[in-house]
Image (cartoon, rainbow, N blue to C red; front, top):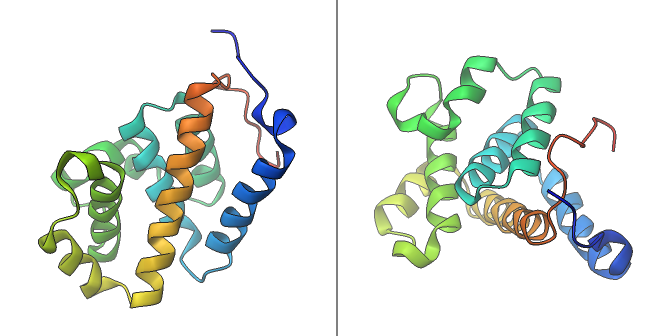
Length: 151
C-alpha cells in the first residue's frame, strides 16, 4: 500500500499541535505502560496497523509482557489486567466507539472508581490523541512496520 500524503511535512503546525497533546499526556502522571495499553486498544479498534505496530514496540521496550499485548483485544476474557487497567480499557472502548453507544454511566462509574477527575480527563485526552493519530495514519496510509523506537 502506497502512502498518500506525508502529513507531518504538509502541515507542520498541525503536527506540532498533535505533539503538544502527546507531551501533555506523557507528562500528566499517568503510568506510561497504561498509556501504551490504551493506545494499543484504540488502535486495534480503529484498525490502524501502523499504530498497532508502533505501540506494541513501545510497550515491549517499556517491559510489557507479550501475553498481555496479545490479550489487549480480548482483555475482558483474561485475568492479566488490574482493575485500574480494566477500567482504562473499558473507558478507551467507550470513548473510541462513542458514536455506537455513547459512554454509559456504568463505564463512567467504573473509571471514576479507579481514576481521579484529573486522571480521567488526562486519560480521555490520551484516547482523543491516539484516535487522532489513528485517523491520520489510516487516511494517509502511513506504512505499517516502518516505526522504529526513538523516532
